[in-house]
Image (cartoon, rainbow, N blue to C red; front, side):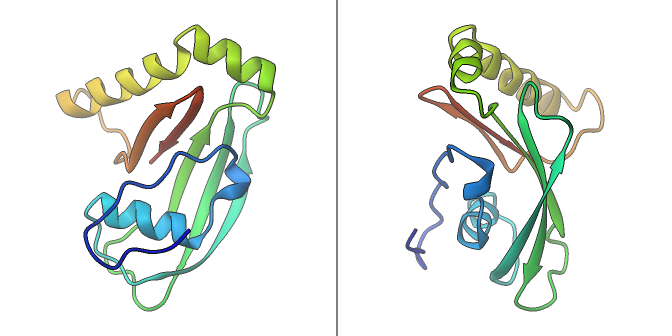
Length: 129
């Protein structure tokens, strides 16, 4: 993925957690308005059993002091199973989860992690906090 040094672009929806890399995280942070030095590297650590989603903690290595930028993010993607992903997408599961997260976040109904990416497209789901 080529980086754009101009205006912030929206990061593409990824099809697999394994596709998360420094350029995608860098683009994600810029698109969210987060000020941070360039991202040099990421380390992915699985969270949970992966039955209903593929969730990873992403540890971030910056080229300099990150200041207030996150040192890690949680990335929740659709499940790896194609059949399960299609069923969840068709049933509206991803749209409901993103809608719920947005509603709670906008209403300040409770403390939740800052959303950096809430997106679903063509049956793929990326929620990053």
